Length: 114
Length: 110
Image (cartoon, rainbow over all chains, first blue to last red; front, side, top):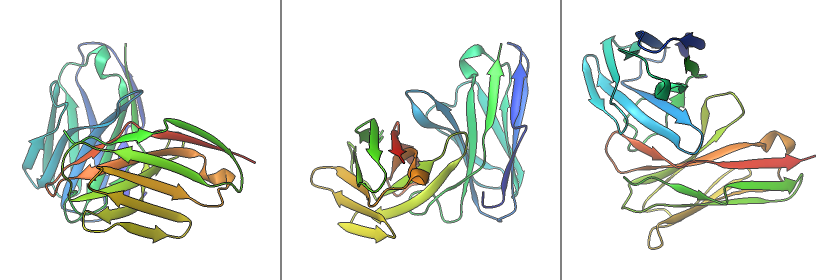
């Protein structure tokens, strides 16, 4: 999986609790992305980063925040988890920017909010 | 949003047959990409075709792009059981984001 790890791989949490997912890369790629995958919706972009401390919103960013303090790590935080955030979350990286180049995906984190 | 939309949504074929999937999109694009996802795994990039290209090959994969019809097709020749997966198209508009379709489930029967 191109030097991308996600942690945890599985998590069950209760409604209202904060949750942080971590994406770690060893490829030194500039761009990093967080997606969620839900049945019937495909992959939807939550947030992405185009450099250290540079982030921007995707199409489903409400309820999520991100941080990138160093090139290799991109954190996704659910400040107060809701059942609608039950999903599989994927991190991806890209070297030149996804408009022109392929993305490499991590193995995913399955999050269940009860 | 220039989200891709794959058609057909599900395809079941015999090993050795060809599998064809289509993708349509709504706005102008810089490139179109196809990804494969095996059950429980992350997506894997298969092939990228730029807006000024009409056809591209990679091994048993053939991708075509018709920008006038805003559509693309992915052909997998001589399918194998290992090709069983979901296939996604994704469009890039030249900015830093991709828009993915909902995916196309392909089952290859040995």
